[in-house]
Image (cartoon, rainbow, N blue to C red):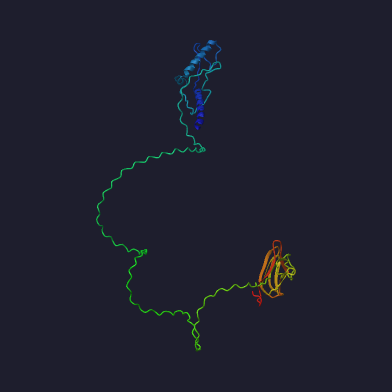
Length: 392
């Protein structure tokens, strides 16, 4: 394709160059009329003479054109002309004369011989690689070949003759002692042998142990009372007796119980008085009073008390009061919008009638409660006090 695109401009240049070369190599020619011995004016203008002179002039011009079209005439008239289009040339209107006029029709010349083949042009640059085409369609699978015929079985070869026996080899060196082999399997049981003769009398054996007591004999007559003898050896333990009958169902011992758990319903309780945990969670025995915030001991024993309270915005000092005495104190220091938790677990021994409650000090009552935070007071009997009627 690129060769065709270059060939078209080359052919056009060759055609233009051929015309320009002929025009350049056309010499200035004067045409004269021999009959009247007058010189034709320059430029081939027709004279104002009679018509026969014009016919003679046209006839001479035609003959001149025929002679010029021949190759030999071209060489004599125009000289040697260069027809290769790539040589340098110029066009000058003063160097040639167009042998035609307005009053005559142009006479076409004979077709010239083809020019020499031009030199090959420089090799063009390699074009860009085109887009690869789509893969071809997979062809159909060929037919399955036929199974070859089974070859014929060859003749059985002859058995070769036995070779001569070789001579006895030399005795080899003694090898190293091998490792001890593993124990072999037990052999088959042998047949029983004949009974042997009685053996010689053996030595007397060792004295045997004392035998067991025999069964008691028949009861004899009562003899006279003898002297008191020494204490005898303890006899063996007798056999286990039969299992007795199942007894009647006894009464279940009643275990005393006492426990409570209550939560605070309002934040920042007043100081120096029992904190009222009004939201009761458990108080089946009724030993805790939500109206006073106190626990009343009705069963003497050991108790466990604990609290878990939220502190917010201000400090808090919490005291556990038992038997009218502050048994334990804890402090939590907070300011601003800070929030934290305070907790306690303690074991106390109480008597019947003792009371237990919680208090906060003045200006240290930051105990808090909300929908997201709780404050809880809990106590229960661990085990009662030992008495003659109640056991732990």
